Image (tube, rainbow, N blue to C red; front, side):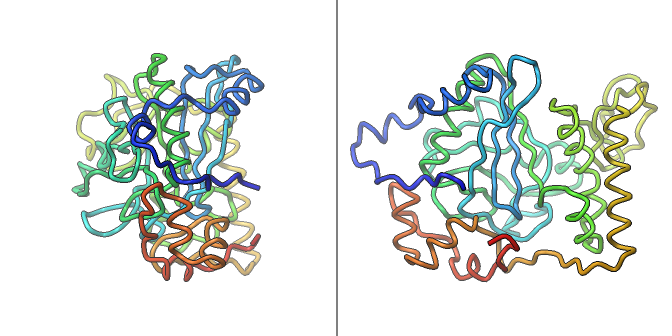
Length: 323
């Protein structure tokens, strides 16, 4: 079960002013040591909307990424699918890279970091929006909210990795964990082709535990391609020839999942996609909202008691099967 970040509200001005320089908690440093990681080692972040979870991965002494910790997200907005225009309330889906300049110690939601939306591909497709963040509290209008205590811990881990020499860390934002079953459930969704592209990057990381190289051409994501002459300058133009073959282990994983998805669909299994009124909330926070009400949850998730955004919509989200 997830450890919830529901500690008492911080009250001193000194403590609030120092929030961006707090050290990584000793317990998490100890976890790093047990997992052969150092606080300054590179990180990678994965976000899953449907599961309302954020993962921090860290490179260990083997040179591969290993899971450090999974955080329950308190709130995200919109529906499954990418953000396309300003005001659509959609939280972004895609691959992003966060540098030190994108960390915001003065966020109105305690601490935050900017995802960098729109990225090069999204900008070329005409998508609009700005200041799409991972931040504290339990309120979202196109962002991912982790609670103040949760984002404080994530911010510290990211800060130390960037200070350690990582130029930027990759954030992979997905609609759901990209299993064959979830892909089958969403086969009729108009975003399925886009999600299939994202799944390639997901599979590379799942198989190799290394950060996939991100490229864009033909108005799509491509991963781990070595194009003749370098990455295309025109994101919407046809892709040049690639000089490298796909990783056979990744290709085998993708083929296995395709066959599993086709098997589920041909068997006529009862597969229903998850629907949202306006975003989701991790079940742990949802239970607290149902039990204690929005004012109590606001106090538990924000040092300034930021109101829970659209609590009725959060409660309208269908329960996940494992609740």
